[in-house]
Length: 378
Image (cartoon, rainbow, N blue to C red; front, top):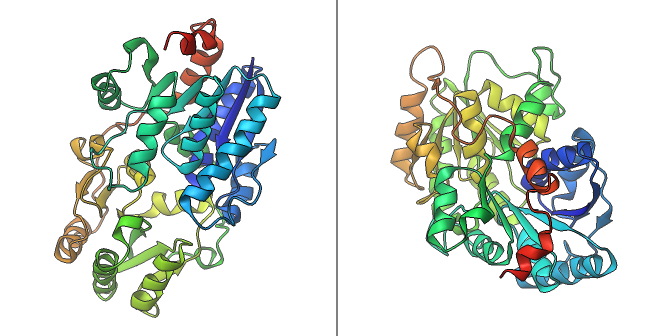
């Protein structure tokens, strides 16, 4: 069996690395296409998870427009599909890389397997353009690996046949547990600021902000809240600053030089997991962190109006606060009151760490004897 796995961004690499390792363990002839996004962090991730990129995208990162990037990726992946006899192309999540690869697979009649399928907010503008991307990928996919029963039900309501949807959990838990084993008491962070040691007399608030739909006044509201929290004196705000120039400009305008606010470079994944293990609370608009934080029992204030991961709210870990200044300040102060973190001793609703093995088994065990027959049945 020959399989092509396609990814582009840091979160995709993290979530597909365990799948690649599981497929390699199953003796699959595996090719990996990387579209070339998040160059600064990709090398460390590939080394961390012992992955080898077979094919790299050309000039995709230099294309300024989203539609242009999509077109270039689709063309380059199509060439690979025409040159090789793949049984499956595997994509993850809702990025442009995933949507382009799924489109190329569908157009060339190579069955697409979608990891993290079925997430929905119901609003095409939130998150943008990810909600659009994930719906396109669903239409192009022959097999859907849903992370939760709710995600599976979303797909069934859209008319996806039940035998094409398999609930497996989320592979980010697999990756997180793999890396957590490497984060010991004597772990030395890669980032120079973190390596100088976190102060033990501060309550660590980990923040990440990057959503396109929040850029402008919504993002500024969140940053003002973090500025206020930094001046409380008992907390340390750690914010790895996203590489998006618009985000970076806003962050440094409002938070540069604020006491008890650390503006960090984008972190390698072990450093990020290290911060999660030390945090009291998370403030974020990230989808992936909503899945990762529960493994550590962490509460997360979600700075968005909607989430395609409502399980984190239902399980008690997450609270939707939008970009409301007062709600963020009050929420952080409430959850950092007292002498110890208010961790939630509940199971992560996104899985136990065995999702990748389930996916590899489904793709290789003969459950689908002829994956191309899935397309013929369309």
